[in-house]
Length: 140
Image (tube, rainbow, N blue to C red; front, side, top):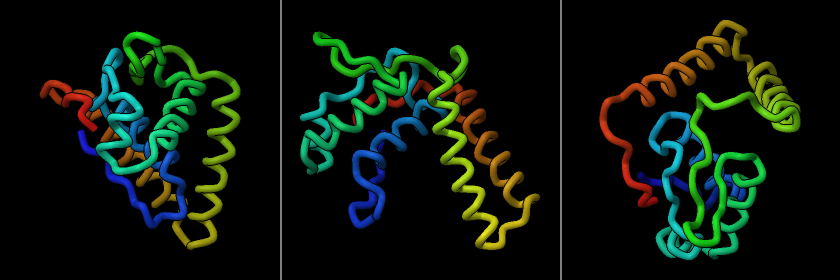
């Protein structure tokens, strides 16, 4: 699996790492139980500070996407079909969604275009999860 980061983006690198990993879990490229590289290994591969990766992993841990064990490191905690979301997550997600929808409104996207694009993204997650090819190794 490849992580595509934009080092010139206004979005912090730790947030980009978090976002790409969440997307990989959602579309089935990272299944529950997948062991992620250590913070030092991933940082070395990406040529960034290991504290940046640590911050991304800590955020994912607090969100319940991964668990961090002393012996085995960071492991994907659950797949997209498990349990219901925590209320705190739902509130934060709603806030972020509101901002995205406000941007679409301000920039002139129609309601039907917003709904169609959301549907396309959700369908893509479902298609990737249904792909019979085995998950790619966690070589990020």
